[in-house]
Structure formats: structure tokens, C-alpha cells
Image 1 (cartoon, rainbow, N blue to C red):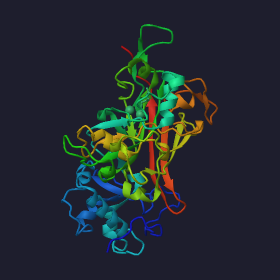
Image 2: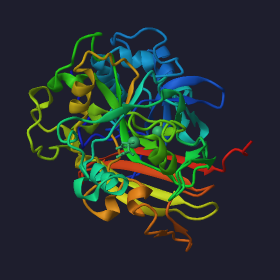
Image 3: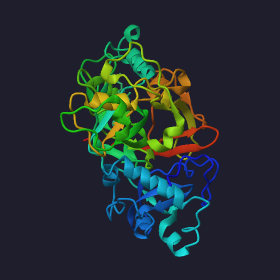
Image 4: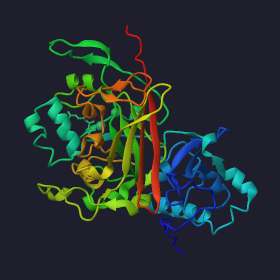
Length: 427
Ligand SMILES: O=C(O)/C=C/C(=O)CC(=O)CC(=O)O
Ligand SMILES: [Ca+2]
Ligand SMILES: [Mg+2]
């Protein structure tokens, strides 16, 4: 019997708060360390972390074609490489094991103790060993806003933008999980009105509200993946903060694009939410005018209705909501990004990370960066504690949250939260 893991009426015998991001319909994948120092692949239901390697050893995945140690790993890479059939079978089986109509594990105290941990007792890890990281630039609103501030307000959108999902190759070595603090980068900047640069701590540290998707092996070297097959190679999505140093960026980016302004830290949320779990929240992406070239023409609804929020929390103070946006505003879809990425034969591997690009919406309150929210520092934002911000200050924590809600089931991502620390002393 095939079960429907997305059935909105499905309930778990584990207690799940109605506002939880992790009902039994979610079943994301992540990596955690238990208090006994065991590192394992797991999932989450409500506030419980579930050890999938323990479940496998106890025989709960019988009948699914899995290698013996697929879950006893410090990354999801091998599991992702096993392909969609496998992830789907495991997610469906977890849904069955924790269904309120199934008391096999529920009635087995010994098994329960080996498998279920309180989320507070485990330490979440970076879920993937990321081979390559690409960041796109797919929000028309963001590209227009930055174009107005950095270049020409009358020709804000560059001529290629409506034809190509523009992107740049990022740096996987500095992709960090939620919870890790970041040092303010030092670098070169050009003071206003000057001709020669100075060196020092960046004065314009920013966040970028993004999501990321993680791929399985997409294509063979030299082959392209058709746009309508692209989703089969997407394992799932995370929240992503592309930390950016705007003053370093404006000086260095011409003509090859972002370099040190964006490779000091890129933070992701620890639970990867599968595309299967997001299926009920599928929506159409914006109408594309002009029609893109044939290899980018997609059919069906290729976007998702994911509500996104950014909070800034000053040190020892409460957080302030600074942006409310939605994944569905993005002009270019993940399918188009992946089709474009491989159209020249570029190989995309299992465990690669693709950033969506900053997700800005149509109104000011939906802008996905401080650069836009404060309009290059001209309009400070007031925090709940009365202090103001144009960019991010030392000891501020930036928190991003995201969830889908169709009034039946809420599927969320949890959060990505990182504190900015002062720069290293100059030499
Ligand atoms: O318009 C520019 O010059 C640069 C924009 C960005 O900040 C690049 C970027 O990271 C892409 C994005 O997040 O949308
Ligand atoms: Ca970015
Ligand atoms: Mg970055």
C-alpha cells in the first residue's frame, strides 16, 4: 500500500504544537549530534529529533533498498545521491511509523528511547558537505532596486536580466549552519568622493533573504538537464542568508561580480525540507515577458507559496521584524535556474547548493536586504528597543524564518540565525 505522507488529516502519536513548523506532513532531513556524541542523519516531528540510523538498525526500514550505513553519516550526501525514489520511500515510511494509527514503535519503550530525542538535547550540524555553491539573482524587484542604487536609476534592470537567470559562483567553504557566529570582514573600500581605497572593517554589513535548494547528481559532464526534468534532481530546500559587505561589494564587483563581499559567510537552516513536502503549496511563478528562449520555457506551476520573515535582534534585546516576503515573488524558478546552469554542459553534483537570490517583493516591507530596506543607508529602521539600523551592527543576530500554510497544514523550515561579531584587529 502506498501511503500519502502529505494527507492533511494524518496525525502523529508524538505531540505536535499546532504552530509547529514540523508536523508529521513535513519530515525534513538533517544531521545532528546526540548528548552521547553520536552523529546521525535524522528527521524532526514537533520538538522531537528522530534518529534514522537507530530506526534502520531496529529494522523499521525493511523492504527499502538502503545501504547499511546510509544514515550513520555526518552529512546527507550519500542519502541524497541515492535518488528521489529512496528519499520518497524513507519519508513515506517515517510517516507510517509515527502515524497515530500505528503503535508498533509507540508501544516499544526500548526502541523509543533509542530513536527519539528532545530537540533541545541535540546539536544540529551543517546538513550537507557542499561541493559547489552558486547564487542566483532571480528577484526582479531586488535586481531593480540594487540597479537603481548601484548603477542607473533610469535603466535599473540590465538588458540581460529578463533573458538569463543571472548568477555567480559562490564559495562553499564558508557555508555555515544556523547558530555559528560571523566576524565582520575587513577589506578594501572606496570612501565617498575618494579615488584611492582604504582598508578596514566593512561598515555596511547586510543580510540577504534567500532560500537554497540542494541537488542530487543532475547531469553528466557535457549534458544539459531539460527544464521540465529539473525538479526530479532537487532534494529539498533550506533558508539561506547570503551575508554581504556592501561597501566592499561596490568597490570590487566590476566587471566580474561579487568576490570577497560575499564569500565570508553564507548561512543555511539545518533541516532540508523536501520538494515532496512542499507539493501542496505549489503556485505559478510570475508571468515572463518577453517569453524566455525555448530551453527555459517551463510548463505547470513551478513556484511555491513560502512565507518568509527576517528579524534583527540587537544584543540582549528583543528582536524586530524587518522584512516579510514570499518565495513566490521570484521571477526565475528553481527549474529554470537548474536548466540554465547545465545548458552549457556544466556538471551539477549531489550535494551542490543553489541560492535563490535575494527575495524582495513588490512593497518596501518585503525587501530582502538592509540595502533596500534602508535605501542605501538613507532611511534608518527603528528597532523595538529604540535603536536604529541602516546596516547590521556588531552583536546583532539576524534571524530568518519561513513556512507554508494553507489553513490545513503548516510546513516550515525552522530558522537560520547567526550573530555578527566585531572584526579582527587590524595589523
Ligand atoms: O546588482 C548587483 O550588482 C548585485 C546584487 C547582489 O547583491 C548580488 C547577489 O548576491 C544576488 C542576489 O542575492 O540576488
Ligand atoms: Ca545573494
Ligand atoms: Mg554569501
